[in-house]
Length: 156
Image (cartoon, rainbow, N blue to C red; front, side, top):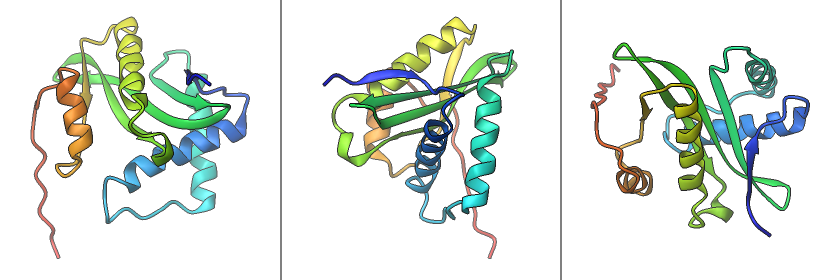
């Protein structure tokens, strides 16, 4: 069956909750220091996600890929000003391991770019961990360039 790409349905709590889990997994997979959300935190974040889906200003865009009705991947986009220019930031992108290597992440980013253009964004912005070779390669293949570096120093 073909992959179906669509926005999250704000009337479907379970779908929004699953999307929120995928968003959490994008953070978890990008950092060994990530602390998973509690069930209460997940519910609060899902409620906020649903509220964001119905915002009149369309600041956020929550798009998912579905394979035979099951969520296979997700991208979370946030419109904002970056360097005083309208932009769209990828807050999270994650594809379930069983579905990787099928072009889902690329297609989610392409659809995200289409939405960002429609919303008047001048560019896309995305953060990638330095050790995430697959996502770095995908970004480079799609024409993304390094715009800034993020440095970190542990203060223990």
